[in-house]
Image 1: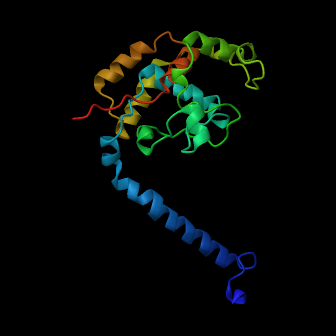
Image 2: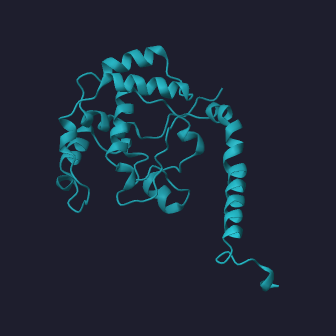
Image 3: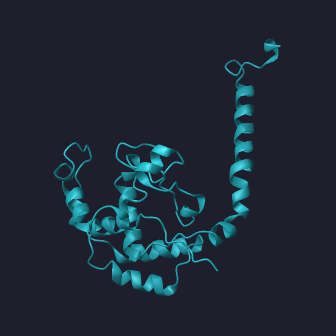
Length: 205
């Protein structure tokens, strides 16, 4: 019976067809249903939208490669829950474009880092990580406290996210331009890190 099983390492055609089949099954099982569930997910989501400064900080987080060493996904296993808090839910990331779950923890998970440290601690840590945590292997980022946010870039980003379904109003967008004016990239990154915490629970109707 084993002789009838195709050898994937010999037949390139069989391998290609099998890969395409597996990809299609994954798409229709995991991705396709979610295209019709967005409204329901948003209805049950407590996620808040980022302010202009937090959104700018998120871009700095991505640009500096923070997601390569930090996750933002608490797994539903006891060790993660005891250390980092409640496990991440699908609706928590309904306004994330793109998600920053990550897959490697050279440093700790940051899903709830906003509950742990002050702004001043984060500033010292970003400028000189080893000053705050002696065994840290994280590089320093002193230059982000000398570079300033471009308000027009933040406005453009918010307009784009609104087209993707994030409920930014004209008021949010107009306020963001003034919020980020004369603010450094370091201040924006700290604002983003402080925003990483569980969303407030919805009141029962």
